Image (cartoon, rainbow, N blue to C red; front, side):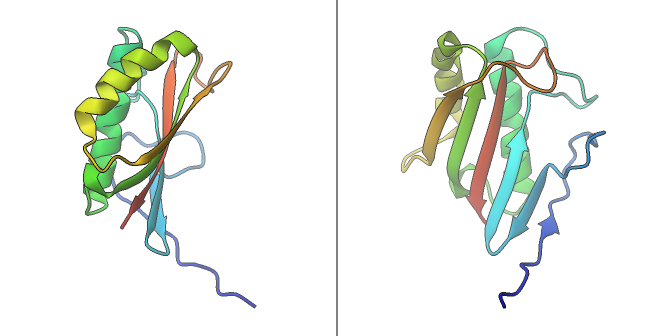
Length: 128
């Protein structure tokens, strides 16, 4: 019988979700998080894909810092966008936040998100 890992929620300044979730948790030395382009009021930011990518990356950076790490602790990012043409803008913004050695990464095109106005979401893993 294997032991159940201790799951620790990460306290952030991100607005509380109405859904039953934490913005980030850690277990077994790994941080698990999913970030979306919401501002301090919990609203999806306007301004298109570049604005949404930047807000999502700011939320990710904030979360990693709250967990005691930073962008350098990021080990993998799964980037979801609703339009293949958005990847160039996301790549541009993403490159402002990560440095070599780069985290492992995948990009996935999806038909939509829980919030219809969202254009991007990032699922990420980091060392804690």
